[in-house]
Image 1 (tube, rainbow, N blue to C red):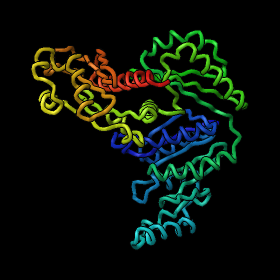
Image 2: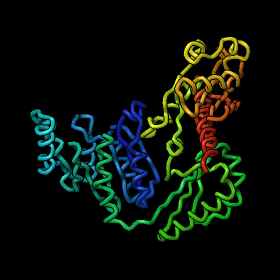
Image 3: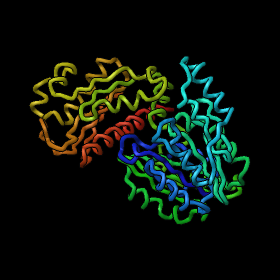
Length: 417
């Protein structure tokens, strides 16, 4: 099965909002074996919408549309549906009853005509009940293509996808299996990873495809298998993951369908009953943000000092001024002292410290732009690593965060029996 996702709204095209709906829909449909072969964003323009519908007619099995179902005049999707399907809007009594209960019962205000108009739907459509909002979804078939219209409000769209559309597609269509397995690697770039696994990649079965998903400091390897025999797909993927681990096991840190690295680190710290703190300069608190994004992080994360300015390193972290003057604020010596001092201040077992020159100018530092020092204070010693992450500024910061997490994980694992 093939499908296309259409998002309707000028606010998307001008960058006022980010389209997260398409990603959610694509992931949901992929899980049930429906292939998304195109995502399109178009304006709130009747002619543009009609031309897009016509272009997709009989080219795909499903067209999923989000947006344009609100009660205001600029929301034109329902009327455009009527034009395309040569239909007319009629009041759906079930929708009207739901909208009335929602407005008068929940919101405790009189229902207006504009609210009642939400119950208008094309007479030929199958109504998809929206329990969490006022705009119903619509399911309409023309020849070999089904057009599904959903509200653009994310939580309403998600409700309809999960509770109405996915069950209906599963019931009415025979679909292949699409399985994915994503391997997380840290510490080596895409080209180096590709070189190491070239022979393994060449030996993959035809029904399994490998995709490289690189980002600063890490590469995700996604295996995708398609076919009608689910057991065969699962077995083949697992066998190839095992053989891959024999080649690059030193850089594999986990799997996307398991837990992200920050969760793995959190679990390790909890298991060992250890704690951690951070002293961040060039990363501006991003390491702390990543660590605390995990539920239950308060069990092991004690706090952070974002000592962005030199005077803060001196006054809050207690870094000796003469140390900074002698070695520069971006140096191994300063990074080491930052880690030691924040570990002492927060009374933790581990502490990460970062200081660097993210750019685009050198600022107070003598170090070249892109230079970063990462220090990790452990229960036994202090490890300091130097890097040059180049440019631009965002890349330097992101790679510093990722590399810090990698260093931390490797060191904690040394204490795992």
